[in-house]
Structure formats: structure tokens, C-alpha cells
Image (cartoon, rainbow, N blue to C red):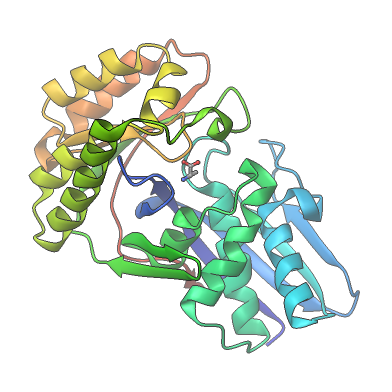
Length: 305
Ligand code: HSE
């Protein structure tokens, strides 16, 4: 086999209190990739219709960087061309860089018959994330590869667990970050009381998924003391809009991944109303792109040819 076509889902990382350890996959949008082997001895990246100006320099592109890492560790000298059709908003907390890195590693694992385990694929793919946020966080790449809800059980060594999610309607206000990453402003120095509450919330999220209790899930994901205070401060009227969305019947609302997108989980009969509220409230934000209505998905990356 010389080439493969795959599709990788958008993902929402952190899922409230699980900074860098939780993520979930969304049904839409999905990026598409065509990965082809050649004998050029070079890694090349192409983005179809690159209106978002995504870097195509190998070291600056998450798919390119993850591929470099894999080729270096495995002494692979093939040439490879990675063609990407981006449907996700870049820089909007939808895991777009994670999708690219995960797609590249998944595709190359198949094309080159490398027999990598899931944890090995996650470990290579997360290195690609350094190209965008400077940190090899595993949450987005894991959800992109596996689908469903993922929880990082250990970073050293990488060990990730996938849990199936009930089908939950989602409204996501896609908002681009005004800076490349806000990770540098986040502190773990949150004090004993908040740290205990944070750990309690993480346990509550996992329990809610095990018991398929989506109301409980919504409550559990709506509190975070690590990244939400920092990223929320960078989104005009975030706290006020979050309150409106919850008052309108959303099960839960938080910031998606590295921000600035805002994600709400909804009962099916409230999804449309909440989409209208998000559209109205975020419309004046200069970085607002669009409202996406979708749902959680248990499907990760998949081959499409
Ligand atoms: N856990 C990462 C962060 C996700 O919060 O920066 C980025 O999508």
C-alpha cells in the first residue's frame, strides 16, 4: 500500500477539570488526510485551500513534527507526503493540531506496518503538539485516535483509557484565540481547598461517564480552577454568557481545550435554543467564527478508502 486516506475528528480537551488529562471526540467537524509514501526521502506537507495559513514547514506543523519524531526513533528514511483538508477552525480549541498529528501517526503506522500500540501512537502523536502550544499534551491526540472520552492514566509512561460516552448534543461557539497559546499563564498553585475540589470534580466526571448520567456529567464539567479562570478572562463576557447558557437548560458549559471556543452539552430539546443564544452573545466578539451544533462521538480516526 502506498497511500491511505483517513478522517480524524475534532476533539474538546480538558472537559472542565481534567487539564491535560481528559478529552472527548466530536462527531463534526472532521479533517481529512491523504498520506502517501514516495522515494524523495523528504517529509512534505500540503494543506488544501489553506485560508487559515496553517504552517506547512515540517517542524512547525504538528503532523510534520510527529512524523519527524517517529522517523527519527524508528530510523525510517521513506519520503512521505501528507495532504490535509482542514475543516476545523485552527486556534479554536477543537484539537485541530492534535487531529493532524494523530492522523499522520495512525496513517504511517498502517502504511509502514509498524504495529505500534495505541499508547505508542499517542506518545508519538503528542510530540507533534509541541509545534503549536509548545507542550506534548496527550489529551487531544488520544481522543482523536480513540474517539469517546479519554483519560490519561499516566504521562510517564503514557497510558490512556477510553470510555464510551452516551450520545450528548453539543453546541460549540468556535472562537479563535487572540494569542498562540495561553498555557504559560496557567498555574497549578491554586491552594489546598481548590485542589481538593478539582480532584473531586475529576472523580465526578469519570463516575458520571461510568454511570451514563449526563446531568451529573454536565454539572461536573462546569467547574475548573486551573485553566478556566485564565482562559475565561480572555473571552469577553465569558462568565455572563456561561450563566445564560446554563440558565437556558444546558447540562454543562466550559472552555473547549486551549480556548477560546466555548462548549456546551445540552439535552436534545434545548440544543437549538442554546445555539441561538451562543450565536447572539458571541457575535460581537471579533474572534468569533461560527456556532457548530454536533454531538459527542465514540469514533476516532478512521480509514476512508
Ligand atoms: N490540554 C491542552 C490545553 C489542550 O489546555 O492547553 C489544548 O487543546
